Image (cartoon, rainbow, N blue to C red; front, side, top):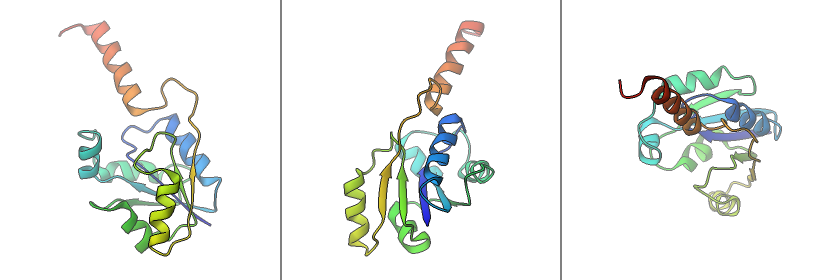
Length: 146
């Protein structure tokens, strides 16, 4: 069974490892769609690493079998046209679609795909923005306004 997981993966951290391991439990083959730079800029701001670098980092993670950089436009196009998964695993904080809404959109494209929402990892630094915030705090405390 093919599973798809999507994300930015700008700073790889334990939350990503948890997410990808949990996604892989739903099938045999894990495809990861890494958001392209334009999508990241539109949704979250300037990426730290380019989409090529982020895809390269993700490709080295143990549960990942295939990595694809997302295209600008509709994420569903790449899923429908290229991967045709059995399962799409959504992170606890991915709110672009509800599970029911995404399943409905996929059915409109003649894909019977199960969509699962994965659980949050209980850890204080399981998010890139949390890590950046902590780094900035430590830097300000140590160096002040240098």
